[in-house]
Image: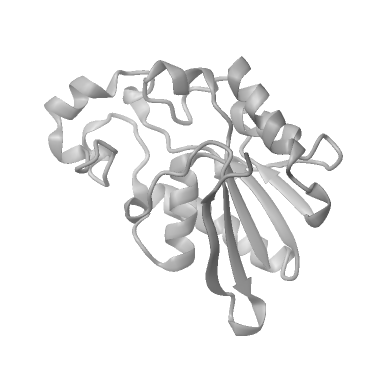
Length: 201
């Protein structure tokens, strides 16, 4: 089985600099729509047997553009971005000052963020839901190539589950980059990373 994870194109909230998780269903910006179309022109959807996406519109719309609406896009709630609770739509800079141990050396969230953000999902919560998605893929798509369009932290959580690592050990993927994992069904789905953060344009 081959799983190819793609982060959505540029959304309105990406340009705002505000925290944007599952609690903000922001659309793609005009720039994001155009960029997804550019990538789609270099993308061969015929190599895929199935397409899944987060139901948040920035991911759903990216998936539809990539496959040129020639294939059904199956929406799965387990692929939504982390839910940052009361931190959704906030400027992260004051939070970095107030809660320095909730961020890593690069200013990105670490596992401590859910201790401070009311009503936020923990990493364990997200790992459980994406783990369930992966189990279903192994059962239903053993020999298929599957496109999965979702979100930056969600992709890192999927990688963490596949390779039994911490989600925060992976760099954030860029918008509309391709992250290809081969899982060998003959060896209990032993994973091999084929590409990470690959751009088509």
